[in-house]
Each structure stands twice: as C-alpha cells, then as structure tokens.
Image (spheres, rainbow, N blue to C red):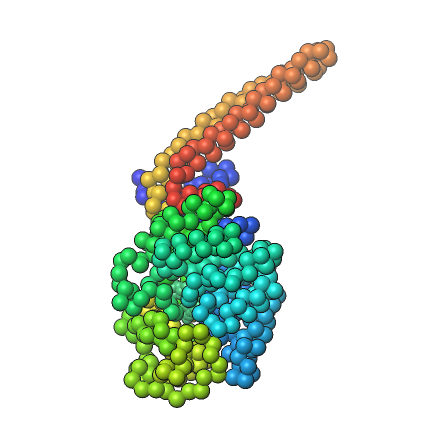
Length: 476
Ligand SMILES: Cc1cc2nc3c(=O)[nH]c(=O)nc-3n(C[C@H](O)[C@H](O)[C@H](O)COP(=O)(O)O)c2cc1C
C-alpha cells in the first residue's frame, strides 16, 4: 500500500463526496472578535508596522497591528512637537488601515512611553478592535470603562507567569474586570525583550514553558468572568510547524514580527527588509538599548561605534519615560527611524533570533498561505495513524451505503415496472396502494442516507477529536 500523505488524504476525503467538516487552522476568538487565522502580526515600532502591513495582514484573515511608538516620526513636524505628531500620525494610520480592509486592526502601545496615555485614548477614540500593551505592566490608569463602552479588546504582553498573575490580580482588584487575551513573548523575539539580559538563554523563559504556565494563571479568571482568555505566543515562531507546535502546548494563537518584516507590504524601506534577507546567524546579537532593556538586533558598524563612544544627537523630546538621554550614547528613536528609512549606516534593525532564515521578501498573502500549509501539513503528520483509520472506516461506511443504494434502486425499478403494467388494467385503489409502498421505500432510502452520513460524521469526530488543537475540525 502506498504511504498516506497529506495530499492523498485530502483527495480521499474529496473522493468520498460527503461534505466533512473543514480541515483548517482554528480561528482565534477574543470575545466576539473572530480572526479566521490565529496569527497576530506583532506591532513593530518607529514606522515598521503601519497601515500598509497591518491592513494586508487583516485582509488575509489575521490581526494586523499598528505600532504607536514613534509613529509620529513619519510626520514632518516630529522634531518640533513629538507628542502632537504621534497622536496625529496614529489617528491617520488607523483610519488608513480601516479604509483598506474590513479585517481586524489592533494597536500596540508601549507602557514605557511618556505619551502612553494619550496614545491609548486616541486608539480608543478611533475604536480599534484590539489594544496590545507591552514594555511595562499595563495596570495603572487604564480607562477600562471607555474601553468596554467602545467594545475594544485588550491584551497585555508578558514574559513570565509572575507578570501575568500580577496584571490579572490587579485588574480584578482595581477594575473588577480582566484583559481579554494575553501575549506571552519569549526571549527569541525581536525588539526590546522583557527577559533580563543574563537570563535570555534560561530555559525557564522559553515560550513552550511559559505558555502552559500562563494558561494555568488565566484559567480561574476564565471561570470567574465567564470568558475564554486566549494565550498568544510570540518570539521565534517562524514556520507553520512552529505555529502548530506552540498551539499544541496550549497557545490559542501566535504573534509574529520577523516574518512580517520581509513582506512587500511592510512599511519599512526595502533596504531594511533586505538587511533581514542578508543577515547571517552570526550577525544577530543582543544589545543593551539606551532604554535600559536588552534588545535583539542585526549588529552593524553603527552599533559597534555607539557602544564605545557617544554619537552626538539632540533629544527631540523625552519620548520614553525611563530614557536617560544625557547618559545615552545615541537616541534609539532616531536610530530606528534612520533604519526604517533604509539608512542603516546611521541606525540599526531590530530582529527576532530566526531572522537569518529569511530568504526573500514576499507578499503577505503568500506568507500567510505558506504558514497555513505548514500548519496543516504538521497537523496531518501528527495524526497520520488516526487519519488512516478514519479513511478506512469512512470507506467501509461508504461501501455499505452504496450497496444499500443499489438494493433500493433495484426495488424502485421493480415498483415502477409494476406500476406501469398495472396502470393499463387496474383500478384506482391498487395504484394508490402501490404509490404508498413506493413512497415508503424511498423514505427508507432517505433515512438510510441520513443515518449513514450521521455515522460518518460521528466516526470522523470520534477519531479526530480530542486532538490538540481541539477545535481542529469544528467549522466554527
Ligand atoms: C523590527 C521590530 C520592531 C519591534 N517593535 C516592537 C514594538 O515597538 N513594541 C512591541 O511591543 N514589540 C515590538 N517588537 C516585537 C514584535 O511585536 C513581536 O512580538 C516579535 O517580533 C515576535 O518575535 P519574532 O520576531 O521572532 O516573530 C518588534 C519586533 C521587531 C522585529
């Protein structure tokens, strides 16, 4: 017998000609917000993820996210009035994204920003679908009532169970409410990292470990607040297989950054994206950002120089609450803005640890399809034995059905022949008796068809269900 492959499985399912529940990636549900694909595009600050990237991801079924930090740097007057430029640019980008898609649009706001609160209010006013908050704990001064009034969902980003625990406990105490989802970002992520520099390699922080821990933390809140609280895993997720594996460990979705940089629609200059394509493993390293957090970047001459001597700069305004501009060797916002514009000699690119695996810049739709196909292929490999069993049971039932159908066809022909013969020389009553019998036979056939379809469905569910992700087959 030839080996069962994913393709042959799908074609067998099709050949059975019974509409089985869809074989698909599970949807991501955050309350009444439903993303067809369980992929959130990570917010990437200082102009990397704006309306272009966010709308293309949303259009392809995922959640597109506009990053609020440094968004005003795309405006001409940022250096005159950074706060005003940020608010104006964020509003414009949200509206632009909305005009391009009916999909789900979120905003990522760093808690460590000096204008965190103003940006948060802007996102609420613009009624985005989801607000993701990281780089600090979003606990104090969150306008939860306004957020709820506008039916906006909230997801904090954490790197540990401890942080998740603290956020949920405090929200419950202060707001009598809890966040709608939670992002667990591990040490393989791009951008600033929530894990201390000397603990980046510590297995205790790996997402495979933290995701189930955070699931455990949110479980009692799900009960108490009667809502599902999806856990979204981020950091180092590169392929559809990675998505499948982390979802098997308990995540309901993933957040990805690096892969989305290398797309046609990403809002950065092409040179920024090409830096990803050209990066080798040894070019990627950890830097100590002037913000005081470690970050992962493509190491270059700019960073080398900046680590040794001060690069003269004029601080446009204190954009980050914790930044000590006087002591910093360079301004991180200016450096990231230069990189965004393709001037990598005067800045640098943040990247995830897997960026060296990026081989080409592709359209978002192509990337999403690649991830979906990889996910389904892995799912299939994982349940190959079950799949073979399902196929043989369904085929057997199909055979039974076909022979029953044949038996009834013979019976039907006999009735019809009989009927034709009797019409010529019989009375009305016997014709109506024959019709009754014929009707009964065809009702039996319909019933059998229903029963068999039902049994096929049951068999399929019985064998495939209980798989993780559990809603794998439900066409919800
Ligand atoms: C270029 C770049 C910029 C980023 N900027 C931000 C940011 O401003 N705020 C934030 O919360 N996360 C930021 N991140 C993290 C992403 O949102 C995402 O969680 C992370 O990239 C996931 O890891 P991956 O790149 O391995 O997929 C950034 C990541 C990259 C690669």
